[in-house]
Length: 279
Image: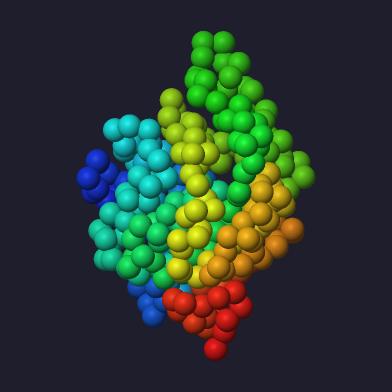
């Protein structure tokens, strides 16, 4: 497997911490964008597999992991602009992009705002929310502090994550602990990514997207919301993966790497391809 190493990239507001693996090849570099709150740590195991055939990088989005926060709570557009800075700093595009939940929205917005930097997109989920669902998720991902003197909020977050991450069913408690620590890296900014996502108009952005996109729909908390995106994917499709859920990048890194690289390397017409158009 390829070795994953770490580096920093200078951007306008500070520095972005990046994990990198593999070497430049005939394949475009793959940019991997994590869910929030978390960090590029979630991609480490799959990066080691994908790095066999191409360069792959996984930044910590601003305010998470070891990346400097933006001066103010960001919108998805702000995340996308920072990632554009990262892409240019590492040699420019076009790159392929993989996004996961919040990172999926950032991948789309990156392609909409900076189309010259993006070739193809693979995402894990692409939720389209109803108003009631947004209210529900905002309650779950509140702005309440995680760290309090009595520790009750931290314990509640952990207990919620044990269920969310399928501990005992799909993942071990050690797996969960590893990712949970990355989720805590935002500290008081833990809610930034989610709230940016809940303010994002995904249908409008997808309508402007002119890059091929494949959405992997897992058996997770956004399965039903992701299926709604099918109506807004003029240049893409949804691929159902019911055998995968949260943690699949660690429990099946070889399978995940194979699925992603096969999608990215498919002989799809570019950039004006519709769903299923192949040479």
